[in-house]
Image (cartoon, rainbow, N blue to C red; front, side, top):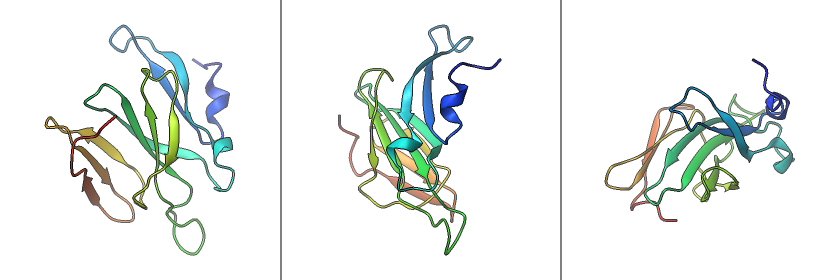
Length: 134
């Protein structure tokens, strides 16, 4: 099935979809991050991960640009986006900690901190020092 939103994602952008029936059906919610927001990067947001934080907000982390090797398309800092309204809107920014990697995976640990795993250029694991705050 081709969605009318499919064209939005052709430029390496990340979109959010929500389900209210346990995953049988999904509807478009919003764009998390779009290539046009980051015109200085060759590529746009891709390879994303998502977790629900302790306060109920959503955190998405994604690769933006490169990662295929030197000197062209080097790893760039990861992009993060937060939603405080159940994916209706997002605020995206480059991560303050210049984690340069790809294929991020996120999980909010039961005690509150967030763990971030990446696999390229090598397997790396980061764990927040304290629970994620709103």
